[in-house]
Amino acid sequence: MEQNSGKASRAGGAIIAFTIMAGAIVGNHYGQPSMGMLIGTGAGVAIAIILYLIDRSRR
Image (cartoon, rainbow, N blue to C red; front, side, top):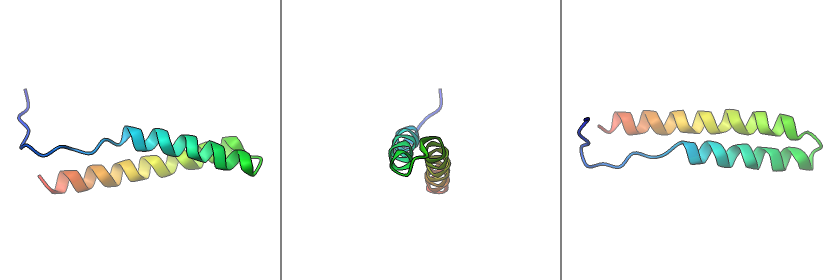
């Protein structure tokens, strides 16, 4: 098993799920729910990668 240094890592999955839903809602407002979902997915993945890199640099 891998030993943790005691620092909790941030979870990116919840951010991805939230941005997908938010993108679909905003996209639906503009008549393009699929486009909103794609933009939300891209934004969520980008934020999750940034959080991963920040957590990785702190170890």
